[in-house]
Image (cartoon, rainbow, N blue to C red):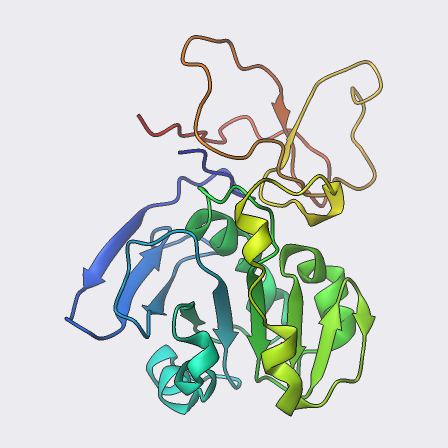
Amino acid sequence: MKLYIKYPTLIVFFILSLKANAQKEFAINSPGSICDFHFLCYAPNSNYINTKRPYIFVIGKPGEATQDTYAQDSLKDIAQFYNYMFVYIPNLGKDATQKLNCIESLASLLTYNYTYGNNNLFFQIRDKEITETDINTFALNKVFKSVRLNNIIITDSVSSGTPSQNVTQAFVESIAAYDEASEDEEDKFGTFYQEETNESANAPEDIKSQKVYFGPPEAFKYTLTGLIRDRSTGEALPFANIMVKG
């Protein structure tokens, strides 16, 4: 397992509660972390093992609890999304930074074993205080194939103005994406690892997230070198953690 995070805080991912044929509650990080919160996962088909499936991340209205967001969400009842996984995120904070800052880390954590980029990752936002500018600022249009911001569909920083009833088209599953990884670097996400070369020795102005490896490990004896930097400042993170499962 390759785990990529924005902060030098080890992510702890564990089950808090488990109910048969119902949503599951999880936690990300630990108390004191900027990304410490609980979220819900719900599989309409009750299959929580399958990894080759689309994900729909949902954030509700300002101050809305995850249980309320889950109860009011109508997407989970649409037949087309029966095999999808829904992730309900609490609407934390008073501004867009506090609400959206940890979304990419959570998406990367839940889909660490994806082998096909962001082709089947979608984001539903029911908060009218969040704008298209906020989506582009946090590059969530790159993390997710489509973002539904209230009644507007945003894809790759382009607002289509598509009405809400066309969400079934915007969130359609791409079966072909399961065959091999996308070759488009813009579709990749999840890691802030950067090779330390002569050109990258100085703090970069903008580190764009990209996933540099997809699939299971192909080698078990190798040396991994490089530098992990803060995305916003370019400063090195000396106590960042990298975990490799197995």
